[in-house]
Image (cartoon, helix red, strand yellow):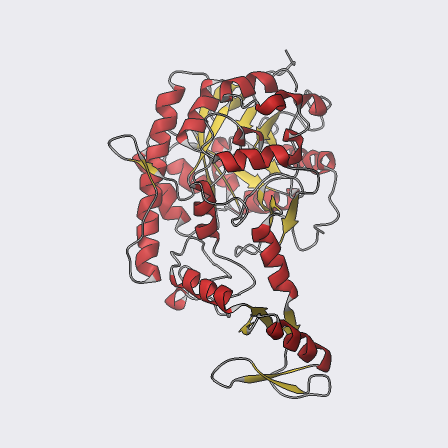
Length: 467
């Protein structure tokens, strides 16, 4: 057995191994409950979770509102109902174990504060901690304090934590359960690469975590654990971090490995995909409507977005020396001006059936097929306001008319639609499939030989061996 001491997390001593929260409907009450039952910290996703009916069936939300605001109100209600349902499932499975139950949410999701309030009040005493990232969750401590639960902010740099602590966390530092360092180059899902950092130049995580520990010490928080998320596979590879005074008390988060367990709700096609991944099959991209980088499997869905972004030219609203070729870009006769080179490109794309030119917020035109243009329009028309601000649909919570002060961006996509689709068994080729950058290790790890799929209990036991 690998030497791994228990840590105080969310008010209880637990194994310092944490299930990474994965929405939508991937980290569930079942996975969280079983992880906690095994002695670690189980995490269910509070991002548009499914809810369980009286017969034990999981129900996917169906929206009936005629306007985006009406559907947004429905979404918030469904999210609260689903989160409470998943918390109860997790609590019932975990029983009187030595583990903890956490809920994960995105700070930039639509209605996040109302959803947090609704779930934490409806699932009182069932949730021990809340993890929150994808933005700067400056009010997460205040909300957690209302319900006496611990909060675990997710950050990707020491600067982000320092800003959050000075702005608000110092007011409720007694409930700061841990700080999750999510490596922006290795973690799956949305990543916190800042404008000052390069997606192509990853930094060594030890140095960044060491700086985070130094900041915690400065604030008198040396006893607060740091949870390392992103790139964690075998604990034996992190043995130099354990009982290391420079990084202090530390826990490890597993986001990708729990996908391939018997309790995981993912489809058989998704399971088969994971086993076949090779180095380079998972990569960062900048297509998300959140504006964040994200780490996902390079499939047909990502390929189409990449190709779509490549079919793009700059335009001018009035003629100039460089952009002198008139181009009529829609049936209404609206025109812009292109350079001679770009006009030739546009003509070629149109000949290849990419006949529809769509304006972007950056004064460019993107060329798509008539079918894709219709799909983009339909997806926007079904918007439920799942993000606080969405580049793709133009939704912006709490702004005038709930609209961004910019054109919707046709280079992006409806993240709610595709994540719901893949979570509920639809194609893993034609939808967004998040994964950590080390997902290719399923194919290399002898634990998964001959198609072996462990239970969560078996996975935790394996992790505790160091491998």
